[in-house]
Image 1 (cartoon, rainbow, N blue to C red):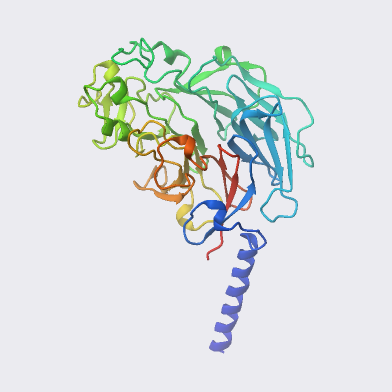
Image 2 (image 1 turned 180 degrees about the vertical axis):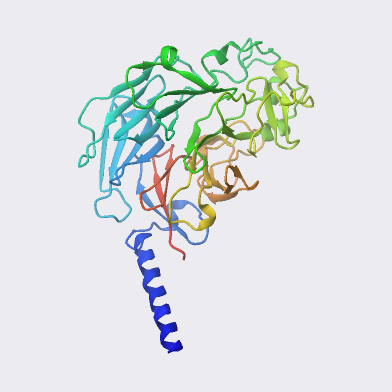
Amino acid sequence: MIRSVNYLLLLITVVSLGACSSQTGSEINFSDNNGDISLPDGFKATVVADSIGQARHITVNNNGNIYVALREPHNGNGVVALADEDNDGQADITKYFGNYSGTGIQVYNGYLYFGSNTEIVRYKLGADKLVPSGNAEVVVEGFPQQRQHAAKSITFDQDGHLYVNIGGPSNACQEEMRTPGSPGMAPCPQLESHGGIWQFDANQTGQSLQEDGKRYTTGIRNAVALDWNTHTDRLYVVQHGRDQLHTLWPDYFTAEQNAALPAEEFFEVQEGDNFGWPYTYYDQQKEEKMLAPEYGGDGQTVAEEGKYEDPILAFPGHWAPNDVLFYGGAQFPDKYKNGAFIAFHGSWNRAPEPQQGYKVVFAPFDNTEPTGDYWEFADGFAGKDSLQSPGNAEYRPMGLATYNDGSLLITDSRKGKIWRVVYTGN
């Protein structure tokens, strides 16, 4: 009897594993060499699409249709729609639409929201249509024109609010922009309408920044990477740290220090927080918030204690975090549950040292905060071991999304490649 019971349990286990396998990609046509990237053991990738344009952020509808924002229009269109009809992991239909190009894109409440550099618009999604048939509705307008950090990334909370990143239009709010020795403007006037996250009504059209926007948090140089964590019900962002410490202040910083500093900061955001830009930067080697040289700092002076929020995790300088995604799927192993994937677009400001970044990392979380470490999840995007210029990178990871089966989508901004990463267990 015991032997029969054990055999039955073994049979149930095998059947269960087989069912799990069929849900996690047994029919997917996986790519050779995972589409030229490296992954942890147990993961495989297929290329959903290739060469779709300068892909930015990515989102998925309930029916499995994929939508990607483009930085530059493709034949006048700024959104790519992709459908996989035979469920092999590769797009069978690719269509372009929309008169806007930009970065932020997310499906919310039956609409596709899109962030151009100066407006947030939305398209009504049909249940059986890949491309929306109606015109875009303006949700928010009036964002200032700016030459630097203009990308409008977006996310939504669970109470009907839309959050929009408005990057600072400069490196460090200097009187003379990016000029050696030029002091910072005090107080920085750019913080009045830049350098933070603004909150809007997610379901209301015809809003403007000036009349309807609520500054939710300030002191963030540029947060292309932001996501609302539904598990903790809080907003999280990863900031692009400032540039050119050595170039602008050679008396205080060496070229080697310039390559490593300052940190890319991962913030847990609560309403009213101030994270310190442009007055401070974070030195991950000292584990201190430092006073910026434009405001009297010398590379050694710590910022006023308690005035600005510290990061919950710090990454090496100039990696360029361009998306963050909290994993809520059921496909990946338990250690990934509710943790954060972060896509690093790669540096330009580390010369003469080699450029770095160009990877997707994972930071495990314990409730509301990371456990204190992270590991590389997807690498090899650069295509070479040592990179002197971002223009020589093969790919640059940009956007992240969870597909409906729990697999992970990653976009590339150089050639417009999209990977779908699946956990197979082997």
